[in-house]
Length: 475
Image (tube, rainbow, N blue to C red; front, side, top):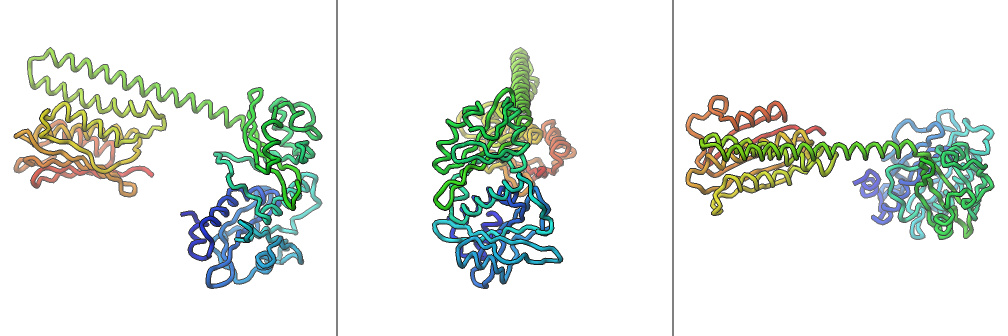
């Protein structure tokens, strides 16, 4: 549960739908903080104790914050403007600045309306001492902030279905103000530069979106006239611009359009490089898998020409080891994030051991329990080899009468991976010691557990044999 959701559940009477609206607000309110050059605190009424609790906080990027400390979760017995905004359900900004530690603070309380009810109040707080004669850019910011505040108070902002994006443009990236017909009435220097990257050499102020030559009007204006924000990317001449337009509609009329643009050319160029790199990595894993399978096929051919059953068995064990590594590379060739869904690999390893070693009459079973989830590729490779060795050890040595069960368990506890391979066979010989009596397979397992997984391994023999491995996983 989010911090806001947890605080709301413990200290307020807010419904889940109201909390969801506040979550949408928090996804958007950095814009209001930046336009207003102000710290924002989100207040809600406390359930029984009276007063208010701060559910969320955001600081402005273009101005110095008033709060060095985190205010989320702080209780207030009284906040006069917040109380007035709750009571009268309107923006409260009248009165003289409040002095705090020698600093004059202008506070504006903005009611957050949802389904015709005020569910919270935003306190927008600005250091008046830092104020100076505002530039045209700052005046445009403040005017847009006022429009957004009115929309929040009337319940028309934030939108009910905000776009999900990995990056968002900020006010400082590039700011546009447009009239209801899509004509640019003001453009910040960064916004002008962004459109220059797209090849627009004319002065964009006074131009409509259609006149900019990017065919934006067909896509944007119909949606904006319906009161819907529009967000998307434009590409021209090798440059990429992320732009967002928000209709400023309140009090039954249109206040124009707020636009934010961001030059993301370098980000998209880096994305293309990453896509190329990912494709290259997948191709490498694919070729490694093919090469390993070729080696395994050559060993199988060699084993068929050998007369010694012992030599054949040794080559077959090597083939299974190579095949287990190939399985990991096959998985990585499908997804280049260097992590492996190991449960699928483990199941295929068990199938391979059962088909290669277990009798075909079904008297011997090999099955998987639990889950390891995603594992780093280096852990997955070592663990694949370990499972091959332990499972074929159990199938070959635990069941002299040809029947029994082998169970592989996978479990994650916090940052620890726990693996067990248990059989219900004859158990270990009397006096068996891992350090002294281990065969080649167990020696390989010991080395992999200690050197590759940095883990611990134990053996237990009691009506069968159980091998347990515990290894740390990097967080």
